Amino acid sequence: MTSHRMTRIIAAGAIGAAGMGAVVALPTVQAGAATGSVVVNAKCSGTSVANLQLQREDTGKLSVDFGVDMVRPVAGVPWKVSAKDNGTIFVSTTKLTISDGSFSVSRVILPAAGTNKVVGHAVNTRTGETCTVTGSI
Image (cartoon, rainbow, N blue to C red; front, side):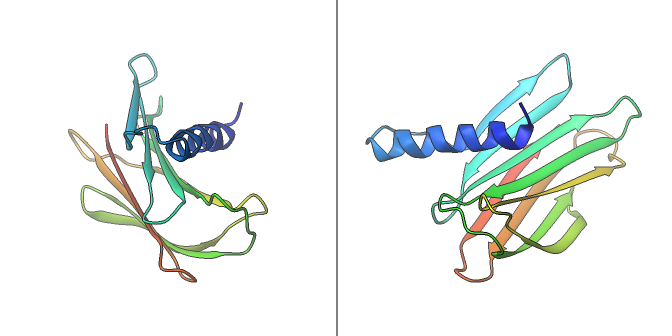
């Protein structure tokens, strides 16, 4: 199962549970000790869900995957996207959603010494909805 598909399943479950009146605590964090990975999911200011995945590569670099999944799938929606590692911007772009209403950005970066605090931020340029998700590894 792809990480994007997993994100959609997690998001759908969280949104479905919220719709039934259940209390959903987002963001959620999953850490894998064996893989050195962190997964963070967060609700955006509207109905979308953001996902941040961080993983240390065998090369010592840091793999960063940030994405947003809109509840109502609409292709071609522009989102202004940025990502920072310990305050240093390493992504600044505009992404368009694909047919399922999502987009993702992947980068492999040189990590800073010690803990890396990664912040992904996206703004839907049509609606103003914002998504911010933070993870540390």
